[in-house]
Image (cartoon, rainbow, N blue to C red):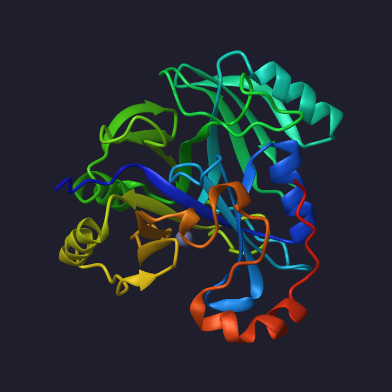
Length: 314
Ligand code: ZN
C-alpha cells in the first residue's frame, strides 16, 4: 500500500456572483465545470467545481459562491496564490487574452527558473499561470477559444502565506513527505516526489503581515490527495500523533475527507481519489445539471427555489 500524499487534490475558494464566477473559469480560462452541486454544510449555497475533462484530482478548483459576500483580506494563515501549469510558450497568448478581456494581470515574470503570469479573478482571487520546467503531460480541457497548445493542464502549486513558516513546514515535511527544494527570497518551495504534477507547496513567510480574513476573493482550504480510505485513515493517525486536532472521516460523495488546521492557520483537507466526479453523472454530462447528495434529494424543490440563477455555458 502506498502511504503517500500524492500532491494537491483540490483547492476551495469563496466567490461572489456564481454566474460571473462560472463565466470566468469556463469561458475566459477554458476550464470545464465538472460539478454543479451545493455546499453539503449549507445547501442554499452552490459548490462549483472546475477542472480538466474528468475532474482529475490535482486539477480541481472549487468555489462557494455567495452573491453579495463581503470582500475578504489576503493575509497570513491562508492560501494566497493558486498556480496553474500551462504549456511552454503559451503565456503570450494568455497575456493577450487577459488584455482583451480586461482581466487584472501583471507582467510575465520569472520565479524558480519558470516563467509565470499573475492575474486575478473577478472577485480578486490571485492566481498564476506557470510554464513549468518539467514536462507536464496532462491534457487540458479544450474549448472554442482555448486550444490544446495553450490550455490549462491543472495545478502547478499553491502558495501559503504565514507569519512564520516553521511549524507548517514541519507538517509538510514530517507528516506529508514533502522536501524543501529551493528558496527565493522569502518563498520556501516544498515539493513531493510522489507525484509528477501539482507537487509544489510554496511557503511565503511574511512576519508582521495581517492575518487573512476568509471571505470573497480568498481561499477557504487546500486539499491534499491520497489514493484511498485506508491511506486516508493512516494519515489521520499521523496528524493526531503531531498533537493536532483532525475531524472524523467525512463522506463528500465525490471523495472521502479529513480536515485539520495546520499550526500556521491554514485549513488543510486530505481527500481520496475515489469515488470521483463520475459517481453520479456520466463524464460527457459532467456539470450540466444540479447534483445533490442523497440527504438533500428530498428537499430538491426547496433548494432549487433558493439557489441563485446559474445558466451553465457549454
Ligand atoms: Zn475541500
